[in-house]
Structure formats: structure tokens, C-alpha cells
Image (cartoon, rainbow, N blue to C red; front, side, top):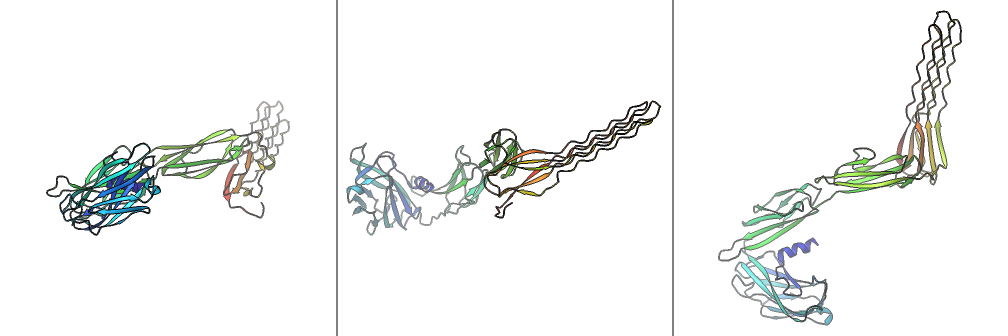
Length: 484
């Protein structure tokens, strides 16, 4: 598609709507050089929706020795028509006729005729190839229509390289370096970097030229070269083109399973290209451009990932909803809850009450249990329960008699146990199994023991510390075949 666009811009010069078909010429070399050899490919296309039926097409190459002629003699020019067509030559006129009704019908595929061994005359300038078309279409009756195609002949010493660029594809906001070399002339480079209008920059006969901050999806660079020929009213013009593509930002986002039980686990996975940053809501303000996260979902939640496109700052958002379905209930349970601590002994009442005993610390559920491998248990809904035991209550101090002596002090409460750290191991690909998380927590510290009563009351003990919350570590590993 880009080739067609380039070729039409450079070579196709016709009077609009004079002929039913569109005519263009591709010269080799490009541009044509005076006193040199050349071949011309006549490209005939049908850009309409209706078939055009051709009786004949005559192409006349201007023969003579001045600037407005193409060749000093048409003798020796050879032709290569497509299958089903004949060519008859009379001087510089070449009449193309179809051999049958099927060949006469020109549709979207078009036609191409080659004129080879053309000896360009010695005078630089612009010549015109005349086209006479005898054709009809369902909407327009048969008649003769005409147009012309202008061809420039440059001085023999003129040279112009291809227009190249590096790199061919950049991220939004990126830059490319263009290179060319040519003979002395007037050079103008035109391009639209952002879709907001074409820029034209006067440049020299050679590169490089750095085009910066490109954000349009496709940027076409056109190098227009103008050569003034003494004695000619109009300058000679030729062009070179190159195309850069700008990789626009993309974002993909999935959430699986899409439906979980209450406090179910879902895997969020995303991938951003051509971006500088990503955010997850609810979740982290900054996440990697590509990655995954396991989340515990207590209620139906809409998750949003937003990527910021490089160069443009445009924000690209994708959303996924994880639905909480109370009908999804556990079919298997893993429980990690430790025993509570023992309560402290109360102090006895006496003339001076005795102190209460301390509650004992609760047992931990088991810190860092190691991976709980669920890979070989498909089709089940797992419930994970974890918690350390509660701390034991501190014993109360004993009461003192009425004499002015201190009553017993209360005992200290025991500390709550720590919840387990559980590693859940999943397959590295595919939909995660259904996991419901319950009571992943630390436990309560034991209550303080109260000081005994008396003329001089005993001191209360301190309460026990609450246990540390348990946590879940999500691991991904390849499948295994030996069970869990």
C-alpha cells in the first residue's frame, strides 16, 4: 500500500476525469537522464467500482531532438504487453488492443505495459506522453478520451540516491535519521510528524537530517528535488520517499478466574508496549509495564490498569471485573491454626494478697510453612485457614485483708501467636484454581490480669501483644506429574 502511495505521488500526472482509467509511468532510471537509455512501465489502473471495457489505448511517445521530445527515434523500442493484448507501432505511437472480450474488461487488477530500449534524447527538459483511450463503462458510453503524462529528463550528470532512514520503526516521540546524496539542486524535505500538518524544511544536497518527536502512526518523508535548466520555462522536479512507522502504545489486561468465592484469589495479568508507566486500581500506584499479581477479592471489584504512552503522554486504560459469587464454596480445607496460650493462675487472698500468674504465649501457626502445592488438585475449591493461637489471660492478683499492706499484682497477658506465612504454588500458565482465603491473621494477645483489692490496691498486669498477621506468597511453577 505504501508503494502505491509513493509511486502515485512521484509519477502519476494526469488530468482528472478525462479518461475512464488512470495512467501513470514508472521510469527506470528515475529520474530519466538525457542521452541515456531507459525503460518505461505504463501502469493502467481502475480506481472505480465499475468494469471499464477497452477497445484500444494509444500511447504516443514524443519523437524529436528538442527538450519537449522524449527520444530522437522510436526505432528499436520493444514492448512487453500483458497476456491477451497486442501492440501495433506506428512511429512513436503504440496502439494497445485486447485480443478478446475478457481481456478488454479492466477491473481492480489493472494492466502494465513495458516499453524497453528507449534512447532518451540529449536535451534536458519536460516531455509529455499522450494517451488516447477508446473505452466505455456501464455509466459512460463508448467514446475517445485523452490525457497526458509529463516526464522530466534531467541533465546527464545529475545523480540522486535513495532516501533512507534509521531506524524504520520508533516508539512514540522517537526520532529517525534520514540520509541521501545528490547533485547540486534545491532540496526540500516534507513530513507530518504528529498528524497536525505537513512541515517543509529546506535541506542540502546530502543528509543526515534528524526528524524528532514523531507521534503519527505512519510518517511519510518526501524529498523534493528541483533542478533549473537554462532555456526551460519550468524547473525539473523529482522526488524520493521513505516511510517511518511509529509503534503506538498497546495494553492488554486479563483477570482469571473472572468469578470467585468470597475472599477468592484472582490472577491479574497485563502487558503494555510503547509506554513509560502503568498503574493498577485498586492496588499499586506503580506496577511494571508487564507482569502479574494475585489479589484476594472480598466483594465484586472492578480493576483498572492504566498505561501512559511514551512520547504522547496519552493514557490507555483496560478494565476487568472479578465477580464474587457466594455459591462458590470450599470443597477442601487446609487449616493452620495453633492452640491458645494458658491463662495465668489467680493470686490467693491473704493478709497481703499474692500476685497473679502470667498468661502463657500462644503457639504460632507455623511461620513460613513452605509451598503448599495445588498444581495436581484441579477442579477443587480450596479454603485456606491460618491463625496463631490467642495469648493466655494474665492471672488476677489476690485481695489483701484490711490491714494496710499491698494487695497482689495482676499477671501479664500472654502474647498472641503469629499467623502462618503460606506459599501457594500454581501452574505458571492457565487459569488459577479456586482459592478462598479465611482468617489469615495474627491472633489476640491475652487480657491483662487485674490487681487485687485492699487498702493498697495491687497493680494491673499488662495485656499481651497481638500476633502478627499471616501472609500469603503466590508462587508460579511448571506443572508436575508426581502429585502434590
